[in-house]
Length: 117
Length: 108
Image 1 (spheres, rainbow over the protein chains, first blue to last red):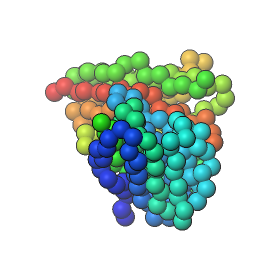
Image 2: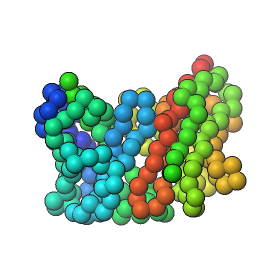
Image 3: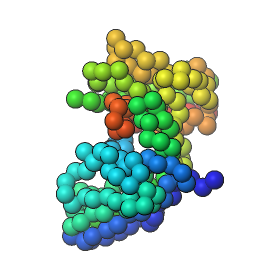
């Protein structure tokens, strides 16, 4: 079946603008994760959803970042008043149940490359 | 603080040579540890996890709690192993902490 998909693949915006990044998880996966990967770094955890609720949003850097998953499937990461430092690849992943404690496999999307000018 | 350190940004070996990608972690509890790989123009994917004690594509990784290490090893590197490798730690609660990655280049 189809893997995790993310749109757009690339997004160029100007400083101060609002952007939305979309993630379509694997069908039937209840857990969804957002990561941010800056140049030369590994993915950095942002937020984790179990179903519709954000079970852990401790990685969101500030209140300009917000994510939703209203129907427990598609998720949108929203960034307000973008800054140049927000430029990065934003990765989405999903897993079947969210059992990271027992090493459940996370399946990653291709990422959205965000560039803030 | 929970941290994963991969001391080498780039590792270059010849085909057929042994390879070891180093990973050290900082965590006070019993960690879940993983290696992820990203091949050129492909998405990030799980290579192996320590709880499974598995060997994938000839790679193995042993958890050494005394040295807080989880090095990835392969006895004979192949050109198709060239990729970006990330060591990762899950302290529980579904968060995964990644290292900065090591780019492995296997020369013919």
